[in-house]
Amino acid sequence: MEINEDIVIVGAGIGGLATSLGLHRLGVRSIVLESSDSLRTSGFALALWTNAWRALDALGVGDSLRQRSLHFTRFQAFSANSGLPTAEISLEADNKPIDYDSRCIKRQEIVETLEKELPQGTIKYSCRVISIQQSGLYKLVHLANKTIIRTKVLIGCDGVNSMVAKWMGLPKPIDANRSAIRGYVEYPKAHGFEPKFCAYFGGGVRIGFLPCDHKSLYWFCTFTPSDVDYDEKIEGSPTKMKQFVLSLANNVSKEAYNILERTSLDSLYCAKLKLRTPWNILIKENIVKNNTCLVGDALHPMTPDIGQGGCSTLEDSVVLARCISMAIFAKNLENDDDVQLCKRIEVGLEKYAKERKWRIFNLITTSYLVGLAQESNGKVISYLREKFLAQFTIETMLKMGDFDCGKLLS
Image (tube, rainbow, N blue to C red):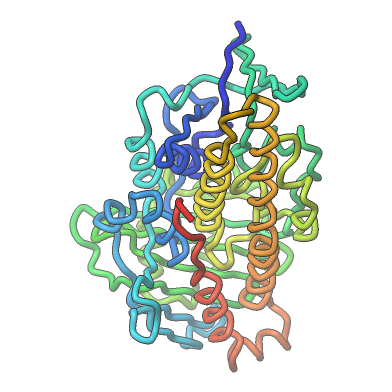
């Protein structure tokens, strides 16, 4: 069976749903192909900085999500080696933009909120893409269920192992030689922790704690395996994962240690960190090619050290929706056919690539360097981190989050 669709988005994660919603708000129809048989709500939580909230406001869902999260009042950093404080920064709006915001929110809340705003039937479940072909002006998207979708525009939002990116010819993301264990804790009653971002840096690890709401907290532990006593076999054992994190947390506060101890074994996740080499992003054909483009982790997987993976994905979605809609509605009524439409969309996608490439380059590079400065076990960097680098890296994180991708309508 072959069907025709103007715009096909692969992947119903945050990027795919946000891009489809942005297009919908602008009167442009799209469909989203999802390989799972239902909405994927797995994953614990993510920090969203000011740039993400501006993007969510542009999509019309920011206020709804704010009601289900806590605004951070400050960022505190400590030495993972000694437990002593190394930096503290206020996250209040004083001396910051009036719309300054920073929160941690459950991933499930985000994807469900975006999904509810889409027209019914936008997401096509159990639609696994197995191959893609170019056919003149169109892309033929072959699904495992034998369906072929003929589309003018193909958008890959299918994550770090993106099939769309592979079809476009992008090199695979590289191993960052670091890993992350993440956890999530829910309390039967209010947990009583302050709405603050608390982190421990050094000794080859970064451990952070972020309350999502009054009853739940998210934590992460990134580490360099060569700097700590690490056995790869723990990745398949939640019990060993938990023991490993606790062994790295000897110098965290008692309340932070209790959060780790309280984490249930089914609320732990371990993954190796990957990133796209930043110079790959500067090549236009690696972002857009033949009216095909990429969003989020499919385009720019990065280390999590400045908390911009999900935030930058939301930026991508707003910018891309704006560029596509402007191209579609800038038609010449006297002479407008599929050829002309595809040419306009090509120009719109090139505008998206031009607008995003240096922002993404800076995010990938900055995140990698911040992680190096915060986590390194080297004597020189450890000394500098205790003196001023901890404060500097936090200020850098906040600066990278103070970005405005603009409204849907420019």
